[in-house]
Length: 229
Ligand SMILES: Nc1ncnc2c1ncn2[C@@H]1O[C@H](COP(=O)(O)OP(=O)(O)OP(=O)(O)O)[C@@H](O)[C@H]1O
Ligand SMILES: O=P(O)(O)OC[C@H]1O[C@H](OP(=O)(O)OP(=O)(O)O)[C@H](O)[C@@H]1O
Image: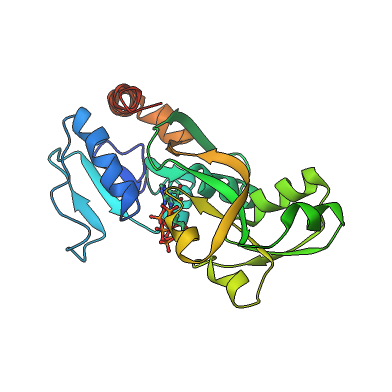
């Protein structure tokens, strides 16, 4: 048994979070379980953060890497957006248990176009659209279901720039307040789905460490129910 095996009772419970909104919005949920993270990831360079519970630690990873850490058992639990989980599942099907919609990180996955671009007409005409997005799987499924032909251009951020600079006709991106679209003269023309963040759990850890994980799952569940629907 490796020192970091979930079967090893010495191994702390490990929760994978990304910096920024997921970390910030998860803190009140952890507080429900009586757990405080002892260092601030915005100011600390540490990637393994201790908590007020010596048996629980938080690791800081990229948002899109959270499912990977949990799926391979390097973390027992994680918090990831539905957007990230859809893209991850396309590459690594099966594997992840998603017991709780935490009702944090709420936004919408949308199709957006430059102001003045006649999207309904382009769709009616059967035009082939260049779509820039980080969310290629969700975008592929959306346009396939509509019967729209697309060339998907994978980007890792700043999608809003793509149609302004001639890289793409439309984008698929997350929208919350709409201010990023507005600032870049873009407008949302279609909602693809509502997004929120989910608690994800390693299945083997759940079997082997259920007695330790269940109180945490219960606390997350209670706290998420207090979030606005
Ligand atoms: N404007 C927003 N409002 C609310 N939730 C959002 C918003 N943007 C993203 N999210 C949610 O928060 C999650 C984390 O977003 P964040 O911006 O912190 O990471 P990222 O920059 O997308 O990830 P990576 O570092 O892997 O590129 C997203 O996967 C999504 O579910
Ligand atoms: O509708 P709004 O409230 O403006 O939010 C939408 C923006 O939020 C997300 O970016 P984020 O702020 O996470 O920046 P990043 O993806 O570049 O990290 C998303 O990719 C949009 O750009």
